[in-house]
Image 1 (cartoon, rainbow, N blue to C red):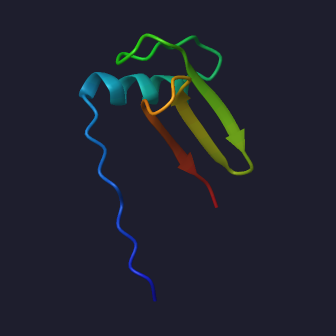
Image 2 (cartoon, one colour):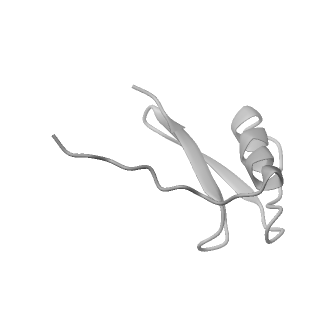
Length: 65
């Protein structure tokens, strides 16, 4: 059995709120509070990914089973 540890992301409340807003409203334009670029929404199978279009910026998502 492998031990998996979640990587803690040190995002501000504003950054988490922007990611949640995009998850809840995929068609809405949401700007990244860190850099000002757009946050994109992508469905991949049963999972959803939301991330800033800038490289190495904020990202998040959910995974369905």
